[in-house]
Length: 432
Image (cartoon, rainbow, N blue to C red; front, side):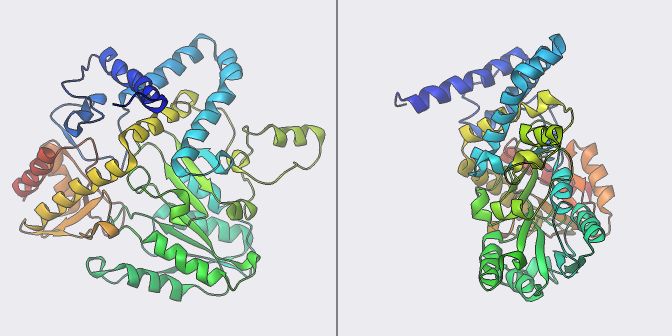
């Protein structure tokens, strides 16, 4: 390895990772777990003997995140007020800056939340809409998006409308998706609210193509009438390599406690300058002194809206929020391209193997351009809940999609191995 400032910093950053694993009596076997996928799982205190294909639900904390949480927790328990006052603002900004660096944007455009749900609700209900405008989403989007948009419509008098993205997810392609969306946009459409990777079928939307089509539509509109692009990004965040600008979104909301392996109860909302101008904070913020000073001085806050103002105030599980930096550092050390490649490799192998099992129909597109880490399928003659129960009995963690389709989901991530893919497919066969 070349001796350079960058490599010295990387080496220093890796020491807490490995040291924390040893402190937890989980020795790192053999090769560096950051360079060898078969040893990566040693950074997690996961129950051995169980195939954990559940990154899309709630992640286990890796060693560096556990160590950071414990460090902040000890300091808060010893002297909570002093630690919060002396270190809290800097630690919060360090987490915001880590998220901004990961997304490729300025920290002032990042709001810190507790989950995807909070981010979606926070953004969509803060939109400044008029009664002659509408918000557009899809039949395939999740309950949280639908409920948040309905609330925004009730508050402002705007209309909410839904369209269907496809007739058969197994036959869909990117061009059809873009055409359905663009043909559904009307002059009164102010917001297009989508989900990057659907947690029902595992379909990944071609967000760059959608954003490109929106730019063309917006080129002939006045700024106040342009279509804003909102994206529930949680199942692409921590898997795909796209930066915030790559997605073309004005609003990108994601929890950090899933594919990113971040602290539980953390999330982000990234907002473009155009998006910030179109929203107003709905929950008072503690992250920017200007808003409190304005209240104290009985005047309007100076400056424009920003991510700090959009961050809900209140007292948090600070030790978790402040450990976000370590989660982003871990992914930076692994390399986003490497993480995406590994996740797609395992998900592709799982889809291929399941496609050869009798009575199983894989609903997730095989094309990696239209899928990510979620693999969804149904079983002829058996409910998804029954299949999930039988898999749990065989130590395979699967889940049922909380949609009318109620598909079985297996979600391999970088903690899994090729051998676990084979084990999961055998368990599916044995469960029939």
